[in-house]
Amino acid sequence: MKITRLLYVLTVLLTVNIDYGQDSTEEQKLSLNEGPISQQFDYISKRSGNYRADGVRYEVVKESNLYKIRKNVLDSIAVMNKKTAELKSTISGHETTITSLNKKLEETTTNLTAVTEEKDSMSFLGIQVSKGTYNIILWTIIAGLFLLLGLFVYKFRNSNILTQEAKQNLSELELEYEDHRRRALEREQKISRQLQDEINKQKKPK
Image: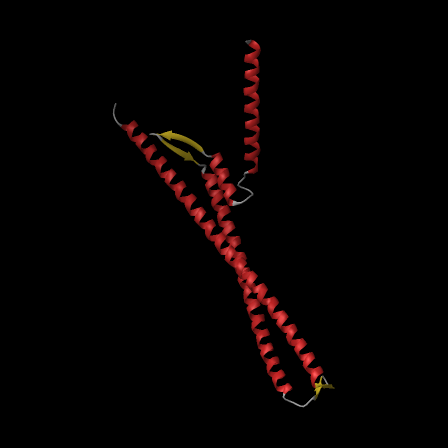
């Protein structure tokens, strides 16, 4: 019987130590100084206290943690706004380049149409070349311009996708912050009301 009890106690102690080690490792990974905002909210949730009153469970969050997560959220929003502005600037530059390339392409196409109607022999950079050779050179230039245009269009679309993702992430971050702020405010109001109720009870004459 003594051996059985001893084995049972050792098993319980080992289980508690393993669980505690896992919880400690997981908690060490969470911090308000690094990591995604979602993990920082998890950190606050794990570090908050709780109690029950009138059958309702309440969470108590440190005011310093609320200020810290608020600062982190605002910093993240500022970074997202900066990235969005940079992407908008890049897109604007690409749009200007594409417009310039389109204009050059139109001018080149117009020149090509005029040249094909002229005589077989013509001057190119001061050198007389046949009409066929001239057309080959000119169409090669046009093909190069089309290639550049396609490259800038691709970069423009990619930048637009990044901008949309940045806006979506910013919107989700703002919604997450507002939801957490609302829930924190509700908990604070409930605690304040309960505290006032307790004060009123203490003031009543016995």
